[in-house]
Image (tube, rainbow, N blue to C red; front, side):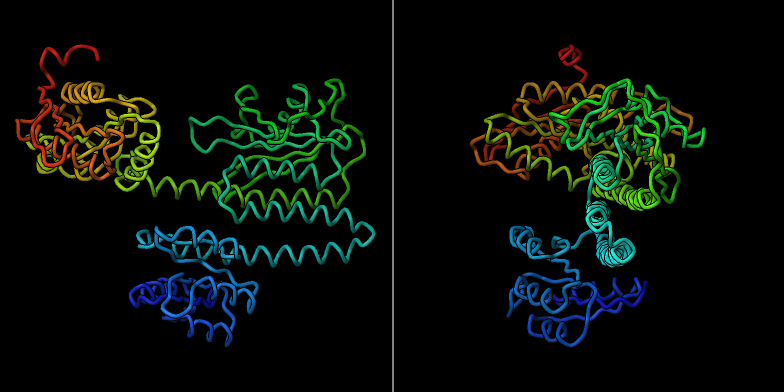
Length: 511
């Protein structure tokens, strides 16, 4: 749809103008208010589909406006604008019925129209479900109790559709809803892999009388085989490759007898915009086929789950794009600092040291030289290759990120200075000894590596540890490059703890 009315409430004129521009670009009708009094007047004068509301206003607190908006227009979706220091108030707003919150400053502008679209989608889904329940109640008064249970299951899946759930959570909800809404003895969901290296996986569950039951291996294999047969041959996974999961609350469940075969099985495909997502199945031990209304519920739940899975995949992709460097695939500068701050907090509590390494490609073989000699695409390929060398030569617990330009940074948790120097020397030697193919030629490069040490109990921050690593890297570069350096962490000290040529015999030893 287009033309939805959006209320923008913020006392900063620049933010109001920015949000107004973004809303108009999407075809919405934005109205803005610079204070709470004007916002309340607008809410009383006309309906709004979405409100983007700053919590801190000069005259009325944002929570009071939220309460009043929900009283006047219960269907309005409210998105909160908050600073990092006021996250608890934002959480309070969510409890009062706000849909989501956006943190200032608004860095990723693409998230704003996406958040508005998802809020409008939730409104449409709610209206659709309300229409559906009315039709079900009118058509089947004699099955009112059963219909209410079915509607609750549909609503359950609807919540997964609008929420930021993981795919595994969506399928758990789906199988649980199938067992609750349909008179069946077993249900399952098979999810096809999104990436080549990912395995297919399935969630399987059963109902044993009044108590939810587990399934025998034979019964699970029969359900999986049925779902596989529903898929086109190119999309059919091999049965042994499928990773099987039970329902999350499967403890103390009664196991179905293995010699009790499925006599009736019905399935639906899960389909997305870009192809098949998987399949679902419900099964009975008796020969009576599923009733028409049960088949309708199965189709509805499958359709809603398809949308939920697409949203979950989109949300996961958005999170990945927000944390990954688009060129090299390693973490970006911003997300690295988030991880470092969390690691420093953990290391402080557990009295453990942590090391940060700053790596910079030396000027003689740096990114500018590659760009000027072979072109910028060659420089991009070089950065990707360097990132891959770093990523494959650190521990799984270590974090590799692109700091900027031709600089990379590594976080090594639970690591002391001696171990950090060993890691720095190993990476320095690895890069110097690796021939990088560029435009049909093998190019050698070198890096300078600076080591920064976090020591618990001395009041260091993420910025200060990175600053030490950066200064150490600068020292190594000034000493000629292709070497490792570490500086004293004490304030005001510039004396080197250690400056080592990465290709000295000492550094050739296995660390």
